Structure formats: structure tokens, C-alpha cells
Amino acid sequence: MDPDPDNSMWVIEPEYVADRSRFMSTVHVDTIVHTAHLLPIFRGSSALPPQLRFSLTLDTFCTFYIIKYIDYHAFETVF
Image (tube, rainbow, N blue to C red; front, side, top):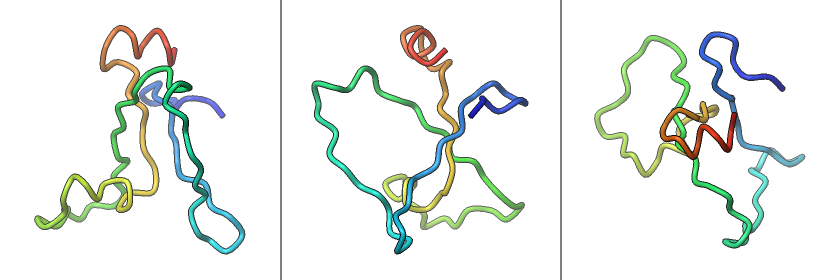
């Protein structure tokens, strides 16, 4: 997989198992290298509903950009 050719950001999406439920696993805290800043990829031209809360972002959108330009450390880790 290569970064998006238009903006050089990586595109990620959730994994699903055979019954179309999301694949879930435990991530141990000592294995986390750095946090990630995610930007939802907006599809279509309709506006987002005003009742959409930030806490539902991961469940609402299907794909995200990883923004490596958020700070120096993220750029060094992702690039």
C-alpha cells in the first residue's frame, strides 16, 4: 500500500472478520510508539448532521488519513 498520491498521507480503514464484524484485539501500552492524528475521509457532498459527536467519529467514518505533519515526532515516525 502506498500513500495517497494527492496529499502523501497514508489511508487506513478498519479490518473485518468473515461475519462482517470488526476485528478487535488488545494493544499493550508498552508497544505504542506514538499516537496518531486521524482525519476522516469525507465521501459525498452532503453535510454532516449537527448531532454527530466527536466521540462517534471512529464508528461513523470508514476510512481515515494518518496526518504525519501534526508534529515533528509524528513526521519522523511515519515518514
